[in-house]
Image (cartoon, rainbow, N blue to C red; front, side, top):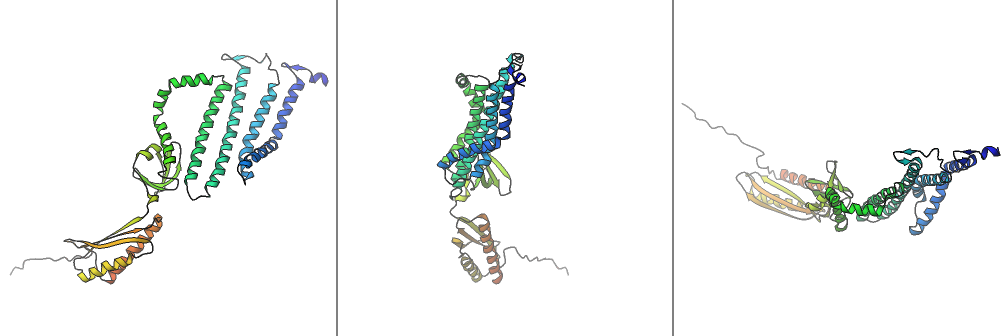
Length: 364
């Protein structure tokens, strides 16, 4: 048995293979328990900064990527203890098998590490979002979503640079210097994307609107559901989902309907010429009383014009900052009461009834 363990196979004793295999199998079997233990240690560190955190939410986000990262890290370290046999170290397209495997291992390790960092960002944003939900202002929620996506992009770029550095041996400093030479061309090619990115920062700091606001821009009206790095997504009154580039949200004339201090309602009546002046006066005064509504802050009613077709009565009123549904409910109530008043006063709308007379010549 001892001779078998000491037998050299592909440049390494058999016992070394068994040790490496045993370590990998051990970590694979107990990966979940080990990752939960380290997740608990991370949770204690995080909990010192943010109190009263949900440990289960943190664990569910971190355990899987942390376990995968530990498995890959231990496997690479264990395999590194083995001597790579010269018999297997052939060349493929000018690169040795050993160098290729080393690069692949580094890529997998970096990807798992970036995955873990992205999950950590998700957890931090989850904490901040819960705290932002406690405040009535939606600006906090907007900033959390924006910076979560922003830092994810930064981490992704760092991951690419790490792969180029540690897996392919690129000199990052020289590469960045070389990129600066073609930076102008890249900036021109990505000009629109850069403009949208800058516009997103303008939106967050200037705050012309926030998530949940009802806005009108470029003949599109709807509620803002998300503000991203490149575009803003709006849910229209037709329940469609419209994506508007942030540059257009900044450069176009934008009407934030949610910031209106009052909502205006209009009523245009053209009553028949057969209506007496006393009934007209009763109608105008009656509409003024109808506008003395709990939700209406101010209103005016005048007989605006006398035309060949009828008497024109204009009524304008302003409510407080109601929701759209509340406003149309008030508007419907006002209209129905005006119609009922006209029925009581026996006043007809101009053109509602038409008399047709046929004049002819009688031959004797």
